Image (tube, rainbow, N blue to C red; front, side, top):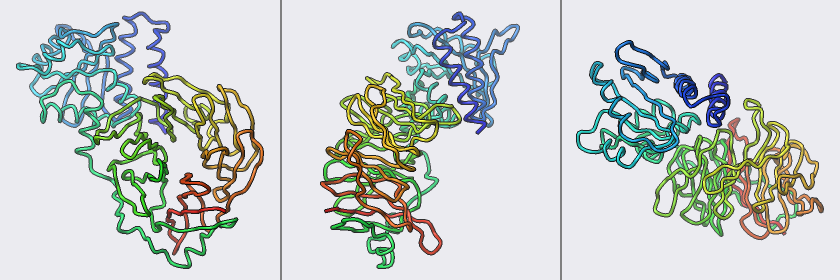
Length: 450
């Protein structure tokens, strides 16, 4: 909790500095240095800002990671900066004991000549960091120690002293070890008759099949593209095709429900502080930056929409952010703080949110209708109706006018649904939690109604 409070404070100060509220460019520089130091301390890195030395001038930020010392020069100009600040910092580093590393952080980026000099022959022991790296630190897209460690790795392995956030992600995926590995061979495709009967849904059901059981009892996201179904677990994204589960992206996921698939080989998902895309050639790249707390993602045309279920820490209600060409536009709603659970996008101007108080449809940021329900946990759109889960066990539907409320199916209390998706006409796939031998597990279930 302490970290999140510190992060919230840093985000608020950063937004104020961007607007130059009650600041001149000079006073903003001093405050920005302190913000950087405070942010590093939030990452458990020892840091001090605005250090003056009588003969060697002022250092914006100094910090230490294990036995390594770093000096950072921060610049916030109106246009990309040239190589001069890099050269000056290199001189200051030479005035100190060997082994120090320098970073020039420029919120306006660098000129092409500066980048070429930094990576060219006779380069200085100084790294060039742009605003994407600072905001990755701010949003905790990556841990602070890892950010600077990957910078050193890139310089050591590839001779690159001008890392981008995409470079850091690439190093992260190459070098990180999984804290949790899931063994698909432990998934069971032949569940016991007792489990089949215990989880059988009530309602007008024509087909029912437990596709996989004995999965970890953790959050799972489901995304559908045509006949193919994609699932997210702790260690990556899996494809379910013809009832066979196969991992297609190997990555630790913090927000497992946040995946959106728009073709066989193109997937968007939320990584802490960023939206990542795995494109058709297998490249992982960040598309947008975002604060923490977003749990669902959609794309409409070229625009990306993110849903947050609200936060008591940041004191904001459930909301949707819209990104147009990477620029953030907030789409607000009045769903109470921390009571929204899930959302679905109908088009650029309409979306539905479900939560503890029911289902609400918004058009142009205004509530159009509200259907009272109890503890709704997941929502989807199927042709001319909106589907949602009530109390984690009942699948209900309502039309686009908030009328014709119907119950489609109900799972028995031995299980509860984490997420679901529509995979065909009157056909659904569910991620279902259940208890067996006093252990909590989960399974994938297909259901077809008449």
